Image (cartoon, rainbow, N blue to C red; front, side, top):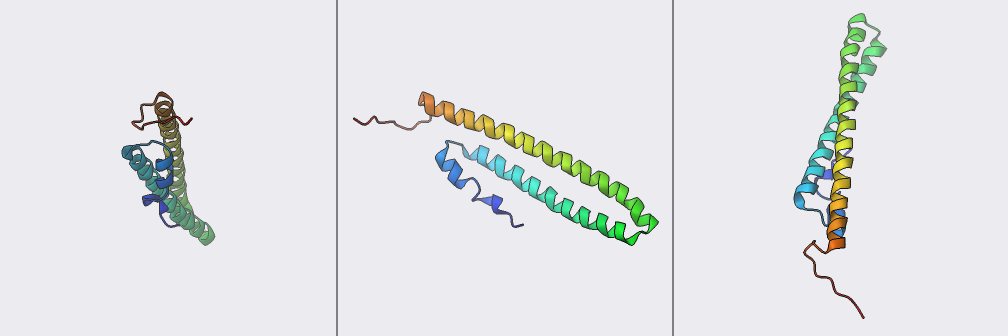
Length: 112
């Protein structure tokens, strides 16, 4: 999977919601981290499958460590997604709060 995260994922969102560049940069960094781990997991799974198919004792024994690494990676991805979710919710709340109090530095005009 190509890394679309590097610029276009949040570009439209950032325009619709008043999110600063640091928040978007943090999201992009986290998504890149997640993608890197998922790519590594794909390689681990391929190696685990090859070892399993070989049915050689030393290869099967190596799978124990590979599966532990895979499980740790999955925990890390879950944690990163949890952090992203929390950060996203906080930034949306801050954005909404800024809009409702008029503190987002944009002038508002009433029609009529």
